[in-house]
Image (cartoon, rainbow, N blue to C red; front, side):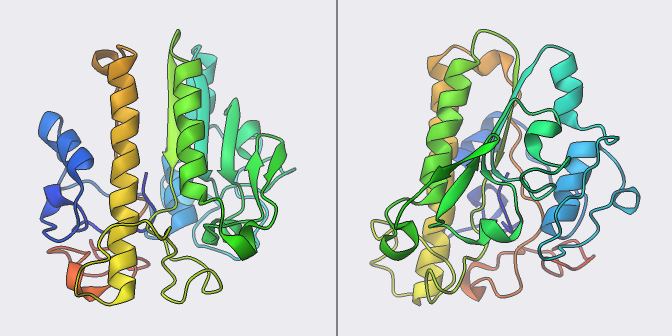
Length: 275
């Protein structure tokens, strides 16, 4: 799952400037949905609906509330809990948003055997964080804020591949809640789209925000491809259901040259279809 990716940001939905060959491959070899709706127009709401199967009006997460400690309760039943009870090993990476460390809403208290990334909503705004949540503990990343040595997206992809390799002998559920292309903290990059310096599109006659935004999406596509290639390598492709989606629509401030909402009206936070 992408974060704030617009309907029109992918080649298979009409994007002409950003390269997304691996996600386009999913569309070609599978089913491309054109009338599918996110459960909510903002991050936490959409994720809560996805995990619980409830209508947004019946979940506690109806908006993005800064520093809100936990949305999910012990009484909530998540997709991971249902699958775990059926014998699936459940793992996730990325942005959880539904319960901070130590709360009943944290991922490992809601059916996941393992979770690596960001439990807290606001923490996920940092692509070069001081730490990442790692099950019940932390992976400390010393000097990362100042030196930008570890791009969180890359660390999470490595953990995703490790989980799939370790779970290959039995049924598994993997939830890859990536943070790309959600804006980053302004302290990380003046464009608010932080991406490593080896990113593509540097030769384009675009403003820097457009270059970074496109590079983030192509990096996400690259790693979707790595996951698909691993499934092929392990002989799991024919017995694995792969779903790619975004939590909601693109931000209104997404670089306009990409027409991120495609033909749809509205953006993130809007109840129009572009949100």
